[in-house]
Length: 573
Image 1: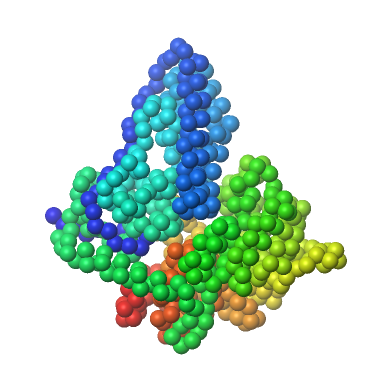
Image 2: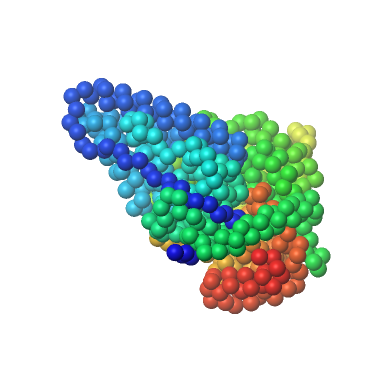
């Protein structure tokens, strides 16, 4: 019998295929007394080495398929798998209690998982999920019981899982994996972000999809609306949807090589979020009109030392040369929170996302900050540079950071170092900054709204927690009002305002942002053609009327219904 269920739209696309349940293996983790301690310790050591090799292989596959930024997830897994404190605790458990390796792994990893999962901040919850992923891989290598092998799937299927780990998602072959559905997860989860990059349809947060279907059950999914139909009653209708989506996708391709301009001639920019110069090259193939966010933290996270001025200069220069005649906004070091370094000990904090990170760390470790600023200013000679400070909360912080840029610019000029034109701006990801945007605009050349964190801080919600994920509401009127304050505050001083969070590429947000007067939309490269198609078929004037109405509503649901109705009348969805 046909059954329709609604989840979270994770990645656009339509798929119809038989289900393939991705089930985790059951490991023998019962406590057993052992006599040969050295044997168990050797099992642990061998499993760690094999796990590291597997993760390194996944890093390489991910770099090729998805780029450096996504690959960094697995470099973090390698660091966790080789954490000396955890390894020592496992070994001590075996020695002191004379127990088997699988029991020791399970006990220690579960202890860390439960401790982190109980914390309120996003960093520890993400680490809890990663610890489970690594634990399963270690247990697999100790017991020689293989994990589900998505690479072995050689027929068209829709994956059905409780959750997909980042490593599983990175290995999906879209030739056979036509889509996936999960019990948990949201639009900003690693699995959803990777699915969009790979252009695989996905619906998440279905709660009990794994118990609703058996292997081989025919299911249809709409990754754009979040709808799943089990045993669809009208197969022809779904096949027509697939055909239409494919045709629409081809039509959208024509928007790759044209400028972004509304029907009433309002020009805006659609830019790309990147992690390195290779990402910049890929973004050019999708028609980006600049880079709205270059995440420099990967230069630091991929190293075993603080990257030198020369190392950074070469990376920034390459990105600027790749995007010749386009603005490249490079974010200064945004480390801390969930992003750690193997060569720097961060202080232990109850809430690291609210603590010692980003511009706060840079203003404390001034020499590290100055090295990056020198490299950025030297690279400015090779293109149009925007220097952007993250996590700014007060005007005093911004002025302190900007003074460092000004002082180093004077120093370089005195040494006859050639500098190009550059702008100095800031991210708006803290509510205090959005509220005071008109004052910040006296000093900042531009704003870029980082909605991922702005939403999180506005609603006091951990977007990775399934229990409060309903509070991750970018189109909530309260968040839209903060965005509006930022744009109006910037425009009051004739500053341009962009956005580099996930919201910038969301089709239900784009018309509102256009109506509020956003100047630049920065997103993943694969989202650029569709975003341009939406904008080029709307008028800014009618979007302004829509945005004004949205600001007066009560809930995100009301806003989304308003936008959906609007886009349907334009035949854009």
